[in-house]
Image (tube, rainbow, N blue to C red; front, side, top):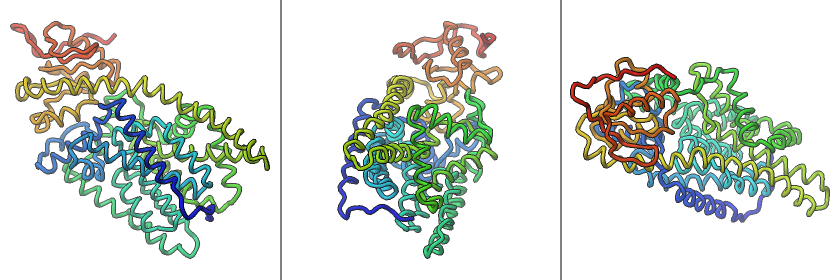
Length: 485
């Protein structure tokens, strides 16, 4: 498992730390309300409920699955902007870490290009802005990889333990330590036992936050029931990740170089089949495959972002290696060829960035800006215990802002669940944001509700509105829904 020689003094880690930190701050300036991620706000709610001994979430049908490391790490901050600041530092560390991994695994050129390409990755910017669990998971998994490359197996085990406290599906990654077959085998195998500590800690966390060690299990089916997504069967997980995410959606023109780079890297040294950079991401994917056997789930690209970054490294290595072999001793020709091929990688990133910012980042910024503007009215003018109909995405924010709702979550009627309830009560307030509903059926039913004429707009911004119910004399208290279109 030999690594390329590296200089004793290397300023690139500091350079990339600064560049990634500045990029995160710049992106947050474009979308300032993006820091109010529903999952992050859920961690705030969990932690506040825990310290106030509020058990209101114990019987709720659906909520964000608690991630112990983030609930007890970010939860005490109780401020989305402060959480972003901490996450921006962690994301900058990831930029430096990926340079170091690239340098140790492929050489300094690939390390520089890998961390540079990450600056163009819209998902890294978005996951950082939202203090996403999947970003922290990637940081800890790559920290595990780097520690194992440097033969610091104890640190590798600690990194995996912390990663498991974000998502336990990383536990199969401990098997990469069992692949160590040299004089360090004993140390590596002992380190493989460390992540097992995460299992009782997860159980204790679930018990403290949800009243049961297995409390979050119902949330998976709860989300599947209200979304249009289809849970993936086990046989489709690998195809979704390797084909739909990596080839069809992310690296549309450059994926072949990733495959070629992986083949070239492995064929140069068969021992690399046991290399941490090869094994850990594949074992991570195997964790999701195993999870799908027990609990089929609706996939999101961010779940597998670690795999995406891993494959990006092989794309860059494949491009650099192809250019080197074609150019032979002509260094300038090699640089020109590599630059020409890297243009297609930059194009892939920019196309995805423009698409994401137009379809997701921009609309969420507008919606969250409206919700924030509506919060004072709901806080000070809404009567105690009055119900609010809201898109599911804003449930954590309202639980965080409205103390009576946090004590009694049933006050908040999530639109996606409300449309399927029999004899659903007419909401006292409606947070109407058409583009935020998960299904077309939900949007249709809420539109029918607000068009009945007994709602008074309190705040209006474009198509979004905060509406208060003003019942007519002798009005019906139950919603009579029209048949679906």
